[in-house]
Length: 109
Image (tube, rainbow, N blue to C red):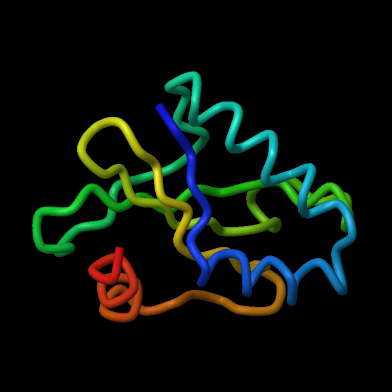
């Protein structure tokens, strides 16, 4: 599996990095797990038009909180070989992003 960050994901990561300095390390751990085929505490989103879109919990080591209070990462598995990182947000700052917004972004990629 190949893990690719989208431009949307990179922009959100830059914003988060200002508050949470270790976010890049957290994302690197997630990417390594995804490359190895390990799905960390995630679930598949429904009603995504046949796309494989998942939301994963990611621990925030900067704030020393676990996966439950850490980051949320949305990614899409494309053609069974590429994982596209679509969105990231801190659970403490943004409660949730609506599924229709996630679907819109997933369709772009």
